[in-house]
Image: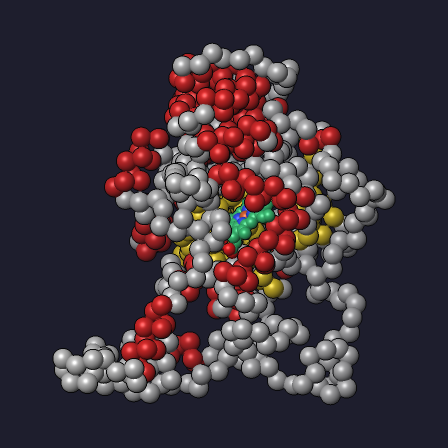
Length: 538
Ligand code: HEM
């Protein structure tokens, strides 16, 4: 067996192979000492008391006792797959990212998830789905940590703990696992009306996908691409499934939730094993990087907004194929650590206040979830680019660093050839001008319109999709105990559309209120409907 070492750059060595399985001709303990029996404790006689000196017993049980790590605080239940991303090169005029140059192939790991259920919950609940992709590029890891719904509940990350507390099961009874059928969820989304758009998507067929293979994915936030000359372009990222967008109907979702709670993860793994490898086209909507960061009156920093595809078509820039199932769920799907701040040269962030909070939160939670600061060394998280950093030590350190001077400049380890300053391959933050401003805790006025975009979504639905939405609101609100919350929800629906409001009110046996704001004059966007959904390269 190879010696138990990991190289200073964190690359795997023979030790990982040695731990692959119980494949050797004999078992050892964790110290490599050969065992002759792992089925019986050491006892004072066959019927006598077990002896404290049985180190093998204590080591084996001790390790088992610590097998569980905390589940993710959100997105706890997930399914992952390995794959490859092939770039068309069509984004090369707007970004210098090497993995987006023509014909570049980049290994990826994708984790799909539900948001609110615990690790053991059912797959087909009504919920948002996570769609997180780790690109192991030649310039470092790029993570696109997106969802299957293009908007988010809140506009500022400071409310994230609040929306999650409201949407997770009630603290007293720990029910329900399903997202929205309870009072605190509806209390929050009707008091924070910026949540109206995301909630409407959840109540539509998008909340119950047929398969992980038939979901769209969205980066949601506006990102900033940087080209080789330093020119910048604002973008929104999209994943378009080659199989088309398909959903379950509610009755199917409920039956499957009982008959096969693992329906989505089984479907994904079975499809890949059978060679029916799912594919998504990666696409971007591009917008000029103007100082106000709006496009046709839409605030690009507001994550409750989409930009309709009629106004900014999605341009295909590459193809994702998932072609290999993880061989160990814990090692890969459970321990993978995504972060919206894992960026590569050519892709940068914008000032979306929701994104800002995410940049802090993921790193922070992973220190707890993965037991210390060295989780980038876990195999699934290791970059495929060389790592030469100055972090040292810490719990679970597995690199054996050489040298004595992890600082620069130094006069002991060859001086560290690295010189500060931007070279061609470095990630350099786009030099965006920050306006002179006064510190405030407030949102811009452009974040105030909470109903026009939900109205556009509703108007874009086909009759059968509308019927499903009405059924979903009626079912989910019907589970609320508080009459006042149902009535408030109807007042929100009245501001989306009187017909929607009236139908749900009838279902709940309540009167339909009048709108409190003028109904927005918006045109339908056919791309939002699953019925008419097409994709340019089909
Ligand atoms: C996890 C998406 C907003 C905190 C995740 C995951 C996804 C995701 C897909 C699962 C990653 C995985 O599979 O391992 C999103 C999207 C958001 C959003 C699309 C909005 C556009 C936020 C915000 C916060 C947050 C505002 C906090 C301020 C977290 C945390 C986790 C998580 C703590 C668990 C990460 C881990 O344990 O590794 N999110 N999220 N998210 N998200 Fe978000």
